[in-house]
Image 1 (tube, rainbow, N blue to C red):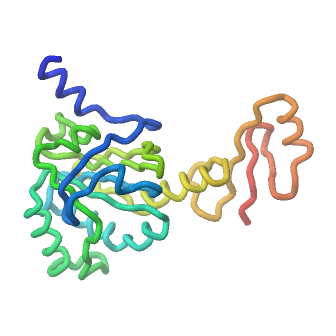
Image 2: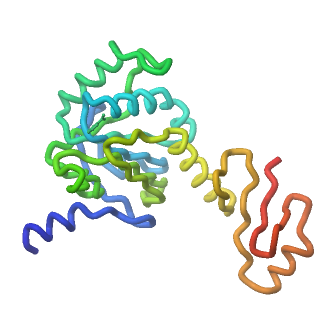
Image 3: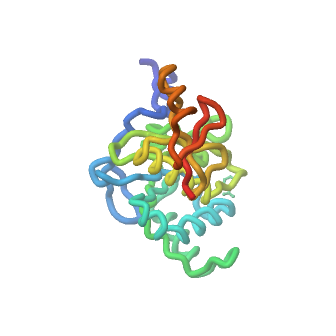
Length: 229
Ligand code: BEZ
């Protein structure tokens, strides 16, 4: 393979349903081996363009303020940027000691942040968008399930801070769909009614509409909901 092609191949975005690429990385919490160290857990692997930058600082503070909520959802956070471990340490110390923003302060980032100066992990996950920057990752978020499969991802430019309530909603929606075999409608939030899979036969379609129980209702044969309240 020539060099240019190899570069393109190694910076390819993995797709939903793919096994998440494996890696060993040095982080602010020691070396991690993925996926071995994360068996049975959901993982949110996210990249940010650079330490000591304003949007990234607000994002890290927000994620740090939600660490407990994600732990309660059996979800581990892993950050990454193309910076050294020393830059990460200095930035995280600054965030804890000096930065107050939006009612947040004194926040300790307890999740691992990968040093990826050689872009090895970033390239495995297609986190570099060369027309945006060839030396910094974009704001990518990979949602990885307990079997190590990529279930969703977000891909944001440098200028746009991510919505962390949406990141949590994605985890909640994926976990609910797996547990109950349902789907979630537009703008779903926990507590809202959920969608039943469309029936796969004429008999089932008729049954759905004519004989549904008190827990369900149909707007048409293909659009049936399960009540949550
Ligand atoms: C930021 O986080 O503010 C930022 C990072 C890289 C480029 C532009 C902005």
